Image (cartoon, rainbow, N blue to C red; front, side, top):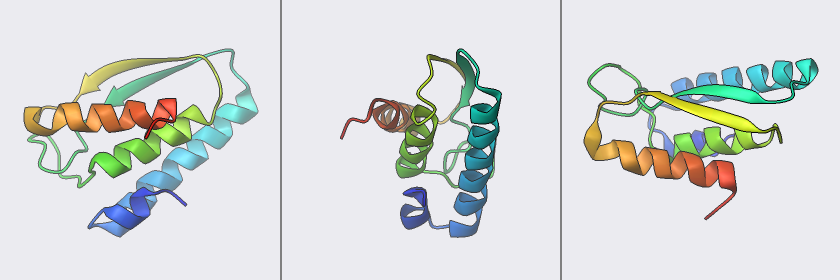
Length: 102
């Protein structure tokens, strides 16, 4: 279960995104790559001007934890996120999840 299931107001969207990421990670594991490149967008954040998603810091942390579970060298290319007031908080949460930090 993704921790985002507990924190996001729109649980249905959170569950769908979490399940989609879990499915992608399963396929990546089957492929067994030497490394992973992740296009990392923070535009699904709540109140981002370019989207209609409702993700918050807990959701981004959960996504980071899932990606870290691949246990592969990983490069992140930040390519979205336009609500400056929450961008640093969401990025910090994501990378805390990746690094397993509290």
